[in-house]
Length: 489
Image: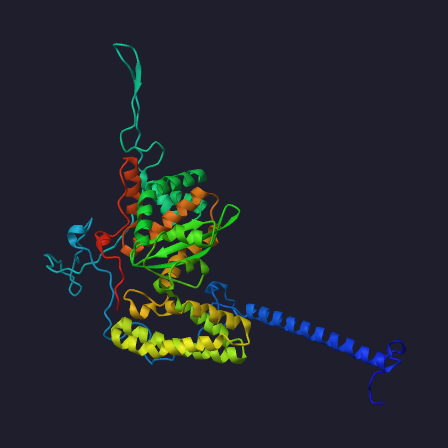
């Protein structure tokens, strides 16, 4: 009558002892079920957190964000019209000096637009209008006729050799460089490169020839790229990062080390310490990275952790609920203030001494919050806080040392072209292909930093190889003499 379901007759205890034993078994079963429910709830929470990951709260790239992810909140309207503002200097295409123009065509009005009378004379300051055009390119083909002549004295036949600097293959150094730049800098496929050369230059290539040109260029770039690696390993401040790659059917990793004017790449089958040492060697400067364990070989006092990565971690804290949310929000507030001051340091409106003094309390509060987070009931949050605290000195190197940035954006920007290349080609098929990728990425990134022409450089390197001479350096002129020890702020 009370709505309680009676136990089946076979389960009804007949005695008090049986009832107590049944209660004990039910309590044990209940405890097991509660433990199982807690385990499943933890699994569900972990899966929901993974589903909620995006580029704002994890290391996922923005390209992986789903359309459902809300874009960043728009900035408040300034009330100004879009485009250049009053007083902003305009950017216009400058006219070339007349002596650099290939052809000058004077255009004079034949008659007066009023009465129709004929006009004569010269305008001392005519309006100048220049049109730049690309001429139709016709490949230049040179034939070398190698004669074989017999000696009139002994009768021995002697064949002529190719002149010094003439390639043994069918294509010259600039054509090989153009092929390599198309595939290695602009990331065109081999088939697309073949079509481009046929359409623009009238040069027909087989797909295998494209690969042969790549390897010719790769060999010519080996020495200057090795010199660039040595330079980076001796530099004062280096930004390092890594991303996935494939070589053949095996997983590999593409590593990057970036400085102000030289950036180098390395493809390695490992992601651990062995690969990091292959990239950085005996590097003794300040290393700017994320928290990946491969970099723990370097002393924490000589490192700078990337605060952009930390912001994503703190954002993830704030989305977990409970005490983790409060912790994440507090850390984000401190980070926001820190970056506001850092922006002023960079634009010169806040002095270094004032910045260092202001950052003292921020450092104390951030580390106190992280210590508080180690006791958080959310196990992942507590674990992340403990890991960050182990590297706490590396959070603040940028405050005291000139030339050190609080983020690893330099390395991440350098990796973006490589990631786009990987998405199109899915990696490399061989070790030789990986060396070509490393060298072309190094050359393209470094020359872009120095505003040097990549086609001219690669062509000159190929010409130097044909003459058995060293290629020109990738290092900026005179830059090696700069002291490599970082200066205190």
